[in-house]
Length: 364
Image (tube, one colour):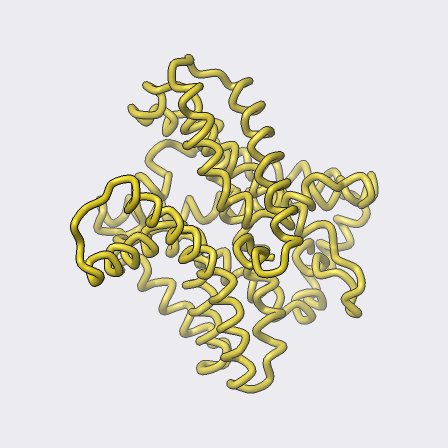
Protein backbone atom coordinates (compact mmCIF):
# COMPACT_ATOMS: atom_id res chain seq x y z
CA UNK A 1 0.00 0.00 0.00
CA UNK A 2 2.83 2.39 0.80
CA UNK A 3 5.80 0.66 -0.83
CA UNK A 4 3.90 0.48 -4.10
CA UNK A 5 3.56 4.27 -4.17
CA UNK A 6 7.03 5.50 -3.21
CA UNK A 7 8.85 5.44 -6.51
CA UNK A 8 7.77 8.81 -7.89
CA UNK A 9 6.36 9.41 -11.33
CA UNK A 10 7.15 7.20 -14.26
CA UNK A 11 8.99 9.87 -16.18
CA UNK A 12 11.46 10.20 -13.32
CA UNK A 13 11.23 13.98 -13.26
CA UNK A 14 10.08 14.08 -9.66
CA UNK A 15 11.97 12.46 -6.81
CA UNK A 16 9.48 11.07 -4.32
CA UNK A 17 9.83 12.50 -0.83
CA UNK A 18 8.71 9.43 1.12
CA UNK A 19 11.69 7.12 0.46
CA UNK A 20 14.21 9.86 1.20
CA UNK A 21 12.27 10.79 4.35
CA UNK A 22 12.25 7.14 5.43
CA UNK A 23 16.00 6.83 4.89
CA UNK A 24 16.48 10.09 6.75
CA UNK A 25 14.47 8.79 9.70
CA UNK A 26 16.51 5.58 9.71
CA UNK A 27 19.78 7.56 9.55
CA UNK A 28 18.66 9.82 12.41
CA UNK A 29 17.73 6.73 14.44
CA UNK A 30 21.16 5.15 13.86
CA UNK A 31 22.95 8.34 14.96
CA UNK A 32 20.72 8.53 18.03
CA UNK A 33 21.65 4.94 18.90
CA UNK A 34 25.37 5.64 18.61
CA UNK A 35 25.09 8.83 20.68
CA UNK A 36 23.10 6.92 23.28
CA UNK A 37 25.78 4.24 23.42
CA UNK A 38 28.90 6.41 23.30
CA UNK A 39 28.03 9.78 24.85
CA UNK A 40 26.39 8.90 28.17
CA UNK A 41 29.46 8.64 30.32
CA UNK A 42 32.40 6.29 30.70
CA UNK A 43 30.67 3.71 32.91
CA UNK A 44 27.55 3.59 30.70
CA UNK A 45 29.74 2.99 27.67
CA UNK A 46 32.32 0.55 29.01
CA UNK A 47 29.83 -1.50 31.04
CA UNK A 48 27.51 -1.58 28.01
CA UNK A 49 24.54 -0.48 30.09
CA UNK A 50 22.85 0.78 26.94
CA UNK A 51 21.65 -2.73 26.07
CA UNK A 52 19.05 -2.30 28.79
CA UNK A 53 17.78 1.04 27.45
CA UNK A 54 14.23 0.93 26.06
CA UNK A 55 15.10 3.82 23.75
CA UNK A 56 17.97 1.78 22.34
CA UNK A 57 15.66 -1.21 21.87
CA UNK A 58 13.04 0.96 20.13
CA UNK A 59 15.54 2.28 17.60
CA UNK A 60 16.98 -1.15 16.85
CA UNK A 61 13.53 -2.61 16.37
CA UNK A 62 12.85 -0.60 13.20
CA UNK A 63 15.80 1.42 11.83
CA UNK A 64 17.70 -1.26 9.90
CA UNK A 65 14.52 -3.01 8.67
CA UNK A 66 13.17 0.32 7.40
CA UNK A 67 16.37 1.21 5.56
CA UNK A 68 16.72 -2.25 4.02
CA UNK A 69 13.12 -2.30 2.79
CA UNK A 70 13.70 0.97 0.94
CA UNK A 71 17.10 -0.15 -0.37
CA UNK A 72 15.71 -3.46 -1.61
CA UNK A 73 12.79 -1.70 -3.31
CA UNK A 74 15.01 0.58 -5.35
CA UNK A 75 17.53 -2.17 -6.04
CA UNK A 76 14.81 -3.85 -8.09
CA UNK A 77 14.66 -0.83 -10.38
CA UNK A 78 18.43 -0.94 -10.90
CA UNK A 79 18.51 -4.67 -11.61
CA UNK A 80 15.38 -4.79 -13.78
CA UNK A 81 16.67 -2.08 -16.13
CA UNK A 82 19.43 -4.45 -17.25
CA UNK A 83 18.02 -6.56 -20.09
CA UNK A 84 21.12 -8.68 -20.67
CA UNK A 85 23.73 -10.30 -18.45
CA UNK A 86 26.37 -7.87 -19.75
CA UNK A 87 24.22 -4.93 -18.71
CA UNK A 88 23.59 -6.70 -15.42
CA UNK A 89 27.34 -7.02 -14.78
CA UNK A 90 27.65 -3.27 -15.28
CA UNK A 91 24.86 -2.73 -12.73
CA UNK A 92 26.61 -5.05 -10.29
CA UNK A 93 29.91 -3.22 -10.78
CA UNK A 94 28.34 0.19 -10.21
CA UNK A 95 26.52 -0.93 -7.09
CA UNK A 96 29.56 -2.76 -5.74
CA UNK A 97 31.69 0.33 -6.33
CA UNK A 98 29.12 2.57 -4.61
CA UNK A 99 29.04 0.28 -1.55
CA UNK A 100 32.67 -0.72 -1.24
CA UNK A 101 34.73 2.20 -2.56
CA UNK A 102 33.95 4.27 0.57
CA UNK A 103 34.85 1.25 2.72
CA UNK A 104 38.29 0.78 1.14
CA UNK A 105 38.97 4.52 0.89
CA UNK A 106 38.06 5.55 4.45
CA UNK A 107 39.54 2.39 5.98
CA UNK A 108 42.71 3.08 4.01
CA UNK A 109 42.89 6.58 5.45
CA UNK A 110 42.40 5.27 8.99
CA UNK A 111 44.94 2.50 8.41
CA UNK A 112 47.58 4.94 7.17
CA UNK A 113 46.99 7.18 10.18
CA UNK A 114 47.43 4.16 12.47
CA UNK A 115 50.64 3.11 10.70
CA UNK A 116 52.17 6.56 11.14
CA UNK A 117 50.90 6.93 14.70
CA UNK A 118 52.12 3.49 15.81
CA UNK A 119 55.05 2.59 13.52
CA UNK A 120 56.22 -1.02 13.53
CA UNK A 121 58.49 -3.16 11.41
CA UNK A 122 56.25 -4.91 8.89
CA UNK A 123 56.69 -6.29 5.42
CA UNK A 124 54.67 -4.98 2.50
CA UNK A 125 52.65 -8.19 2.49
CA UNK A 126 51.83 -7.87 6.18
CA UNK A 127 50.73 -4.26 5.71
CA UNK A 128 48.54 -5.18 2.74
CA UNK A 129 47.01 -8.15 4.56
CA UNK A 130 46.32 -6.00 7.61
CA UNK A 131 44.65 -3.41 5.42
CA UNK A 132 42.39 -5.98 3.74
CA UNK A 133 41.44 -7.47 7.11
CA UNK A 134 40.63 -3.98 8.40
CA UNK A 135 38.44 -3.34 5.35
CA UNK A 136 36.51 -6.54 5.98
CA UNK A 137 35.89 -5.51 9.60
CA UNK A 138 34.92 -1.87 9.02
CA UNK A 139 31.55 -0.45 7.95
CA UNK A 140 29.66 -3.72 8.36
CA UNK A 141 26.43 -2.09 7.18
CA UNK A 142 27.81 -1.40 3.70
CA UNK A 143 29.13 -4.94 3.47
CA UNK A 144 25.67 -6.25 4.40
CA UNK A 145 24.01 -4.11 1.70
CA UNK A 146 26.57 -5.37 -0.82
CA UNK A 147 26.02 -9.04 0.09
CA UNK A 148 22.23 -8.68 -0.04
CA UNK A 149 22.41 -6.97 -3.42
CA UNK A 150 24.79 -9.64 -4.72
CA UNK A 151 22.42 -12.45 -3.71
CA UNK A 152 19.41 -10.70 -5.26
CA UNK A 153 21.38 -9.91 -8.42
CA UNK A 154 22.47 -13.54 -8.79
CA UNK A 155 18.95 -14.81 -8.16
CA UNK A 156 17.59 -12.49 -10.85
CA UNK A 157 20.07 -13.21 -13.64
CA UNK A 158 20.71 -16.91 -13.06
CA UNK A 159 17.55 -18.20 -11.36
CA UNK A 160 14.83 -15.88 -12.70
CA UNK A 161 14.02 -14.51 -9.24
CA UNK A 162 13.21 -17.99 -7.97
CA UNK A 163 11.25 -17.90 -4.72
CA UNK A 164 12.41 -21.46 -4.07
CA UNK A 165 16.04 -20.30 -4.12
CA UNK A 166 15.41 -17.44 -1.73
CA UNK A 167 13.25 -19.64 0.49
CA UNK A 168 15.98 -22.28 0.80
CA UNK A 169 18.58 -19.59 1.40
CA UNK A 170 16.41 -18.04 4.10
CA UNK A 171 16.10 -21.39 5.87
CA UNK A 172 19.85 -21.98 5.59
CA UNK A 173 20.52 -18.70 7.41
CA UNK A 174 19.40 -20.34 10.65
CA UNK A 175 22.37 -22.74 10.55
CA UNK A 176 25.07 -20.77 8.70
CA UNK A 177 27.83 -19.25 10.88
CA UNK A 178 27.40 -15.80 12.45
CA UNK A 179 31.09 -14.88 12.30
CA UNK A 180 32.61 -12.07 10.22
CA UNK A 181 29.52 -9.89 10.53
CA UNK A 182 27.24 -12.43 8.88
CA UNK A 183 24.77 -12.26 11.79
CA UNK A 184 23.75 -8.72 10.84
CA UNK A 185 23.73 -9.56 7.14
CA UNK A 186 21.40 -12.52 7.77
CA UNK A 187 19.14 -10.31 9.86
CA UNK A 188 18.90 -7.65 7.13
CA UNK A 189 18.43 -10.01 4.17
CA UNK A 190 14.66 -10.73 4.62
CA UNK A 191 13.87 -7.00 4.66
CA UNK A 192 15.98 -6.33 1.58
CA UNK A 193 14.30 -9.28 -0.15
CA UNK A 194 10.81 -8.09 0.82
CA UNK A 195 11.50 -4.62 -0.57
CA UNK A 196 12.85 -6.12 -3.78
CA UNK A 197 9.83 -8.35 -4.35
CA UNK A 198 7.44 -5.54 -3.43
CA UNK A 199 8.90 -3.60 -6.37
CA UNK A 200 9.22 -6.62 -8.67
CA UNK A 201 5.58 -7.65 -8.21
CA UNK A 202 4.26 -4.13 -7.71
CA UNK A 203 1.54 -4.28 -10.35
CA UNK A 204 0.19 -7.69 -9.37
CA UNK A 205 0.26 -6.68 -5.69
CA UNK A 206 -1.72 -3.53 -6.46
CA UNK A 207 -4.34 -5.53 -8.37
CA UNK A 208 -4.85 -8.14 -5.67
CA UNK A 209 -8.38 -7.82 -4.17
CA UNK A 210 -7.11 -7.81 -0.60
CA UNK A 211 -4.59 -5.06 -1.35
CA UNK A 212 -7.19 -3.03 -3.23
CA UNK A 213 -9.52 -3.32 -0.24
CA UNK A 214 -6.71 -2.26 2.10
CA UNK A 215 -5.89 0.71 -0.13
CA UNK A 216 -9.54 1.76 -0.11
CA UNK A 217 -9.68 1.57 3.69
CA UNK A 218 -6.45 3.54 3.96
CA UNK A 219 -7.69 6.20 1.55
CA UNK A 220 -10.89 6.63 3.55
CA UNK A 221 -9.50 6.21 7.09
CA UNK A 222 -5.71 6.87 7.05
CA UNK A 223 -5.54 7.79 10.74
CA UNK A 224 -7.39 4.65 11.81
CA UNK A 225 -5.07 2.51 9.71
CA UNK A 226 -2.08 4.32 11.19
CA UNK A 227 -3.42 3.79 14.72
CA UNK A 228 -3.95 0.08 14.04
CA UNK A 229 -0.42 -0.26 12.62
CA UNK A 230 0.98 1.57 15.64
CA UNK A 231 -0.95 -0.60 18.07
CA UNK A 232 0.41 -3.72 16.36
CA UNK A 233 3.99 -2.47 16.36
CA UNK A 234 4.09 -1.13 19.90
CA UNK A 235 2.20 -4.16 21.17
CA UNK A 236 4.90 -6.38 19.67
CA UNK A 237 7.62 -4.09 20.97
CA UNK A 238 6.49 -4.67 24.56
CA UNK A 239 8.12 -8.11 24.30
CA UNK A 240 11.47 -6.67 23.16
CA UNK A 241 14.38 -7.24 25.57
CA UNK A 242 18.17 -7.18 25.56
CA UNK A 243 18.33 -10.78 24.32
CA UNK A 244 16.64 -9.76 21.04
CA UNK A 245 19.51 -7.53 19.82
CA UNK A 246 21.16 -9.19 16.83
CA UNK A 247 24.53 -8.02 18.20
CA UNK A 248 23.86 -9.85 21.49
CA UNK A 249 22.11 -13.09 20.60
CA UNK A 250 23.28 -13.58 17.03
CA UNK A 251 21.14 -15.37 14.44
CA UNK A 252 22.30 -18.99 14.26
CA UNK A 253 19.94 -21.39 16.04
CA UNK A 254 22.83 -23.22 17.70
CA UNK A 255 23.67 -20.09 19.73
CA UNK A 256 21.09 -21.27 22.30
CA UNK A 257 18.28 -23.81 22.49
CA UNK A 258 17.10 -24.15 18.89
CA UNK A 259 13.45 -23.38 19.61
CA UNK A 260 14.40 -20.27 21.59
CA UNK A 261 16.65 -18.92 18.84
CA UNK A 262 14.04 -19.58 16.15
CA UNK A 263 11.48 -17.75 18.28
CA UNK A 264 13.87 -14.80 18.75
CA UNK A 265 14.74 -14.69 15.04
CA UNK A 266 11.11 -14.77 13.95
CA UNK A 267 10.04 -12.24 16.57
CA UNK A 268 12.88 -9.90 15.63
CA UNK A 269 11.80 -10.15 12.01
CA UNK A 270 8.11 -9.64 12.78
CA UNK A 271 8.64 -6.56 14.93
CA UNK A 272 11.03 -5.23 12.27
CA UNK A 273 8.39 -5.46 9.54
CA UNK A 274 5.75 -4.01 11.86
CA UNK A 275 8.00 -1.11 12.85
CA UNK A 276 9.11 -0.34 9.30
CA UNK A 277 5.50 -0.49 8.10
CA UNK A 278 4.28 1.78 10.88
CA UNK A 279 6.89 4.47 10.28
CA UNK A 280 6.35 4.33 6.52
CA UNK A 281 2.64 4.84 7.13
CA UNK A 282 3.31 7.62 9.62
CA UNK A 283 5.52 9.49 7.15
CA UNK A 284 3.03 8.92 4.32
CA UNK A 285 0.15 10.31 6.41
CA UNK A 286 2.18 13.35 7.51
CA UNK A 287 3.35 14.11 3.97
CA UNK A 288 -0.18 13.70 2.62
CA UNK A 289 -1.66 15.90 5.32
CA UNK A 290 0.91 18.72 5.39
CA UNK A 291 2.45 18.56 1.92
CA UNK A 292 5.90 17.67 0.65
CA UNK A 293 7.19 21.22 0.85
CA UNK A 294 7.13 21.06 4.67
CA UNK A 295 9.25 17.93 4.73
CA UNK A 296 12.77 19.06 3.96
CA UNK A 297 14.89 17.93 6.89
CA UNK A 298 14.28 14.17 6.76
CA UNK A 299 14.61 13.93 2.94
CA UNK A 300 17.81 15.97 3.19
CA UNK A 301 19.16 13.51 5.75
CA UNK A 302 18.03 10.62 3.57
CA UNK A 303 19.88 11.93 0.52
CA UNK A 304 23.02 12.25 2.64
CA UNK A 305 22.53 9.09 4.69
CA UNK A 306 25.69 7.33 3.48
CA UNK A 307 27.90 10.26 4.39
CA UNK A 308 26.17 10.54 7.77
CA UNK A 309 26.90 6.87 8.40
CA UNK A 310 30.54 7.27 7.36
CA UNK A 311 31.29 10.46 9.32
CA UNK A 312 29.28 10.00 12.50
CA UNK A 313 31.92 7.84 14.14
CA UNK A 314 34.63 10.46 13.68
CA UNK A 315 32.47 13.16 15.28
CA UNK A 316 31.14 10.99 18.12
CA UNK A 317 34.24 9.01 19.07
CA UNK A 318 37.14 11.27 18.12
CA UNK A 319 35.65 14.58 19.20
CA UNK A 320 32.60 14.43 21.47
CA UNK A 321 33.26 11.37 23.62
CA UNK A 322 36.18 12.88 25.49
CA UNK A 323 33.86 15.60 26.80
CA UNK A 324 30.95 13.33 27.76
CA UNK A 325 32.91 10.48 29.42
CA UNK A 326 33.07 12.30 32.81
CA UNK A 327 29.35 13.13 32.72
CA UNK A 328 26.37 11.12 34.02
CA UNK A 329 23.83 9.70 31.55
CA UNK A 330 21.36 12.25 30.17
CA UNK A 331 18.58 11.57 27.70
CA UNK A 332 18.22 15.27 26.89
CA UNK A 333 21.94 15.57 26.12
CA UNK A 334 21.75 12.46 23.94
CA UNK A 335 19.05 13.98 21.74
CA UNK A 336 20.81 17.35 21.51
CA UNK A 337 24.14 15.80 20.58
CA UNK A 338 22.47 13.49 18.05
CA UNK A 339 20.89 16.54 16.39
CA UNK A 340 24.28 18.25 16.31
CA UNK A 341 25.99 15.19 14.81
CA UNK A 342 23.29 14.91 12.15
CA UNK A 343 23.67 18.59 11.29
CA UNK A 344 27.45 18.47 11.00
CA UNK A 345 27.72 15.16 9.12
CA UNK A 346 24.90 15.94 6.66
CA UNK A 347 26.35 19.40 5.95
CA UNK A 348 29.83 17.96 5.35
CA UNK A 349 28.36 15.26 3.10
CA UNK A 350 26.36 17.81 1.12
CA UNK A 351 29.44 19.98 0.60
CA UNK A 352 31.75 17.11 -0.36
CA UNK A 353 29.04 15.73 -2.63
CA UNK A 354 29.35 18.81 -4.82
CA UNK A 355 33.04 18.22 -5.54
CA UNK A 356 33.78 15.97 -8.57
CA UNK A 357 35.79 12.92 -7.59
CA UNK A 358 35.49 13.56 -3.86
CA UNK A 359 31.75 12.97 -4.08
CA UNK A 360 32.41 9.26 -4.65
CA UNK A 361 33.73 9.05 -1.10
CA UNK A 362 30.33 9.98 0.31
CA UNK A 363 28.16 7.95 -2.05
CA UNK A 364 27.12 10.78 -4.34
